[in-house]
Length: 381
Image (cartoon, rainbow, N blue to C red; front, top):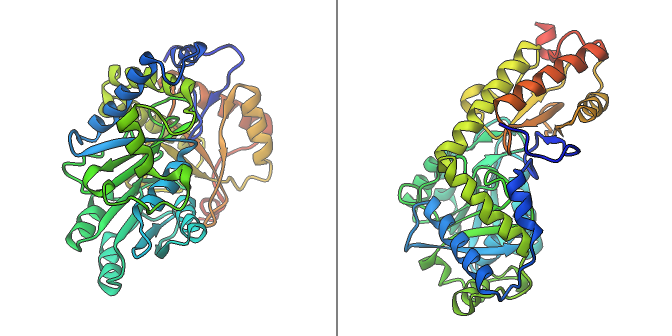
């Protein structure tokens, strides 16, 4: 893709915040009043576009929530899980664990079902857990767990949950907009995401797409005034206003990002570019000896985790710094199962940028006198 950044901006190969287009940045150069008719129209359009992306017209509504994606996830849990209800959290990474922490702090009843970070959740085990504990009313799952990059089988989980007569909540933070989630085929009550992931907006706005029939029953559930989705929804529907100051510049930029998402072909087009980015990245890094944590069939095209090289000359901080000096930013690992680092495939990046990154990796390895990116396990074989 063409470089439309300012000269000083690095390429962010991260899970978000991420590289945005110049036109998204330029959308923030104007001031808007939160009660202005123009801004109200933008907000209405944004809310409806998001519902359309899940095929939820007439059944779902978008409830925007000021703050990062975690604000939206906590709002979703705190609003949809009532005092006499219980949430089963499916955990295979840091973001599942974060939902458990949210439940602890908000004093929501919950149970957990946990897998290793390099394994997807297993719908059959979810079915057994629901049969064992009839007190469970809801299940929560992360669509793409960016701790490792694993794609969880949300459709299979949704089927098991629905068959058990329970309700599903989805954290689709790093998947929404690039990996299909059709509410007409996958039953769920709510899905949380944010402005600065696969839609390629800027940080500052979370949102929860809520099944209206379920949201209507949540009045009074919320543990915090600012995180009450039901109240936020009611006020926006009645007055077209947010209860508290909205992140106006972020929302206007998000509207522009949605224009660009649609122009690229929507979920299919955006996801196609990310899959191509992922393919180029994985093939190129493997050619340098690096090993992915996940096999290809479990890998989501969002962020890829690589095992740390065994070569004594490889020091991650030096590797990171040398890449950053050449305008590429990656992420450290977040695993307990393996020493690793992560490279994102999302944002305003395409084939040109991914190939340029790989050339820089090869150059940096040569400078560091790292012969191969092979990890310890591979070196011992």
